[in-house]
Image 1 (tube, one colour):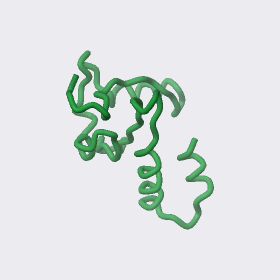
Image 2 (spheres, one colour):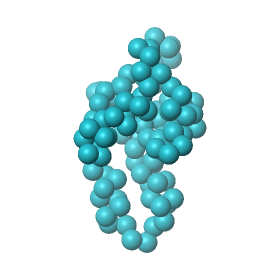
Image 3 (tube, helix red, strand yellow):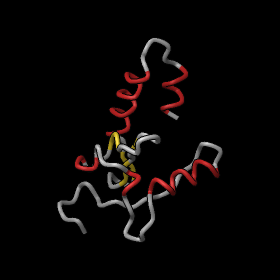
Image 4 (cartoon, helix red, strand yellow):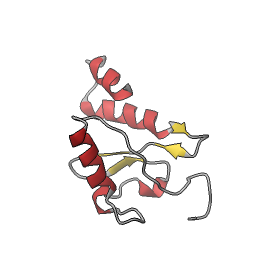
Length: 102
């Protein structure tokens, strides 16, 4: 919703400036008592643009696998295709507020 509103109401900003605004907004959004977070990646390159776990930024989401062996990129593309460009699903990464990998 935020991205749609940002694009519709922004006539002066470049695509790069809008991306920076969106990434800054998304990077601080949390849900589920602060444990849940959103991340964004470039759908063409797969490069992660924002993530609560800072070391994930810059990695290629196309190369990642969940512990179940599923590709988050492929799942997301499937959800977007099935939902006509929109959709939601849960994906489990480690809790960024915890220091362990458990």
